[in-house]
Length: 600
Image (cartoon, rainbow, N blue to C red; front, side, top):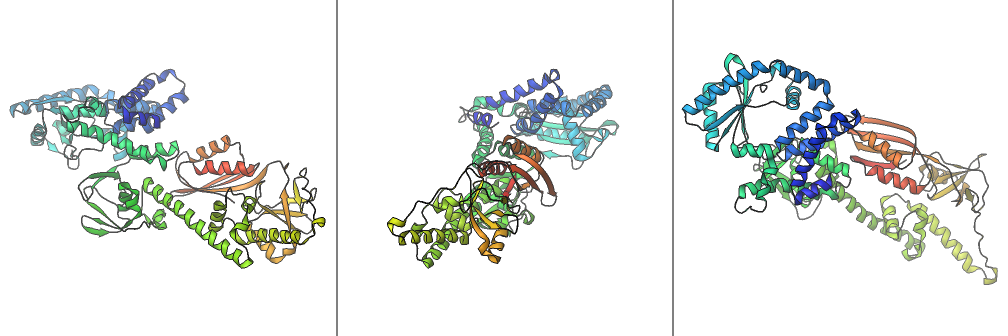
């Protein structure tokens, strides 16, 4: 998908060819097995047909939609086709009479126009039945006529003739010439009551508009290099190309291909609103977008610095949902200062994925810098109290499973590594060094290396009764501490285990040093909690990731919050080591829509 869009930015023919390939594939899909047909049809329905629509290529869009609908909903397709065919002769005769009467009326008024009946597409009929909750007999546009004129003036002259001859139905008039659709589509739509009280839908547009509606962006190939001679045509072409470029520029935030497709689907499926910047530029956003979404659409820095918003000159709150035709102005400060509350879905500050990703990214970077500074300050204060400096820490961070001193300080500042554990390790190291320094050189000895043939060594001794704590589920690679129990040997805890800290307060004398043996093997049970935006296919993506990482799933539960549109997933897994867990958590966190993943 992304490769196709990238190639399209350079040459629009790439996407037209891709769409045509899918048309051919669906035409011959009857020779494939059912599973292949359904997968192909779903792919076309979710991505390629909407993309054809967004690029204005109606000729391909209609066929893609109908063919996909045929394989995804075969019974419905046959029912609607049967209803259309059953009244076809009467409907064609009625349309022919309507076309003759209208053509004569236009000719008498010297309006040059071509009038003809137009075919109806089954997929669009079904969508309208669903959207308006209508039966087949209630549909206006089963009887449909199209009128093509030479210029825009004749379009409105034709409309006047039609509304003089026939009674228009209120609420069924749209002027897409004055207000074009996002894909550039232009036409006048009206529904009138004709003879016998039957309704007829009418489309009125110029020949040029019709060519654009049928061929869309493909009609502008020849204008790409001739934009100075045909600026209006070139502008329409560039608008569509710029839309694709904007999608691709978001790839840093939409790192997964699934997220990229989700964003494209959001762009092509959702209803849109059209608003103006203070300079008069038209911006289109998904229906439901707020003024804060608008700010982040303009630029991430505008969003980060936003302190207020005006709509048509009046102050509005950040959760105000913008409406078509409004003029939006964002008030900014000199400093970036987004609020964490903006990410709270219940408060309604933002409703677009783009804004959410930009805000989350800002806080991730800010938290890293702040935690680094806070961790360094905390550690230096305690070291100074003990008479040491940060240089004395050396490579101690390696015992806490971090790769560098900076990561170590970030972990301390963020609370993932507890300061009391660090100080305990440091004091033990300092005391051992003091003891070695105090011994005569002849009395110094080399400490024997622990026997690594055993799984866990307690104070350097293996083959003792040990068990892994069920409260924190330590894995090889975790920093661990032992606690002597009554009659059950030594229980091994992670160093940051809450239960261990409680035990250390009550009985510090029972705490012993333990270490992993190099040959420790076998599976370990642990729990992982996930929070994600609730969406179709989420559990499938999670199970696929688990299978790819060869993780043994012992238990999996999922609960949905309908109000917040989130899902909580709890996994009980069997993992072999900390590296495997780290890889798995990273992969789970990269699944589209996932907000948080953590080990329990």
